[in-house]
Length: 459
Image 1 (cartoon, rainbow, N blue to C red):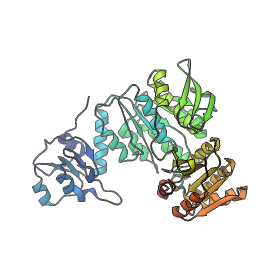
Image 2 (image 1 turned 90 degrees about the horizontal axis):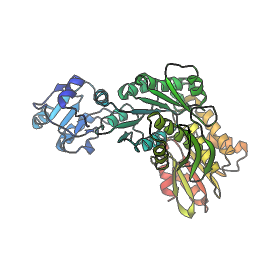
Image 3 (image 1 turned 135 degrees about the vertical axis):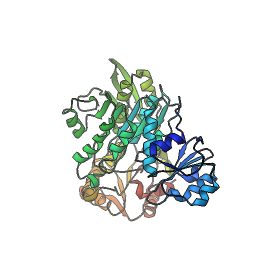
Image 4 (image 1 turned 30 degrees about the horizontal axis):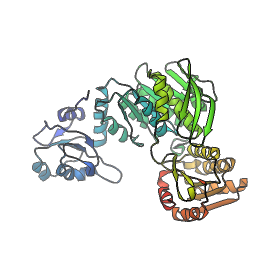
């Protein structure tokens, strides 16, 4: 049953100051973008890097917001004009939505699955949600709304849901600590520890520490689910005895391990033991990392006592969030793998392994800069160059200054056809001239490289 939060309760939670004469207004949804406000919404003014939501208070009120939270004192004429609305001054808009979300979460005694890790968070979250939806009414993080604003905004959408799957991202220490103490997960998932954000944290060991902050909000007797083939997570699991740890893996001995793996262009099949009975699993997306993601989701389903048949159905019917291993047919019957939402060494390596396993005329990799790697940037781009050669890429096109290290290493290894581009337009021109029938093309880069421009140019 939906648990309503009143403006009076918001004022209490945030220690706010009521600026109008009306504290009794009801509202439907929380909104932080004034352009998306609808009649009866609660608009929360957030100060971001580029915009200050307080400046759009009047726009939100004009569009019908019945409740508004601001952290700057508005002009007196606005308060007078909209005195029948509820306007509450809070100390900080971001902290306000976090505290309200924390309170709302406390009203629901339901499973909350929190997913973190260096790569694979979003696709793992999507598979978990697909399995849970076979039994529960699931609320999940949309896209990668996984930060200090995105996670509380997800939880504030709680209505008649009976389970939640949230993604937790981070760039620095103490960020997941904040998120987990809002979400209070009953199950914590750590997909792997790689090199994403290593420029900020300095080492994989520090990345592990930052990810393990997720455990600080874990409910008593909660379960931690980890990829046991990841070296740091496997070592960590052997040193703890104060958590319920559920392991999955393909190589290392784990509680959940697949056998008879059959990898195909359009997906993967394997067998796995659930509740002492063997089941055949069909994953509708190719690539070994999706085997890991599906195993993780099975572990969650098993932890929540979902029937094995429903677990299998949930995996077979899941759909990926866009821009992640998105297979699209373009001209000349070539296939493009659009995977340019983010990029790290680990995710590029996984994507190249998918390309290698795919039956195609030729394999073309268009790779752009991987960002937020700090002092490790040159080394990790060079390692990607090794992976390009190792995974039988026929043509390599790089975009950006850092990616020249990918090209240099690939050429040193013996790759003959390599093109270095300074921008997406140049890369698209080369690619358009090269595409042949039944080629497979990987587009992979950090989101900031705007590889969607290349994809649009080859449709």
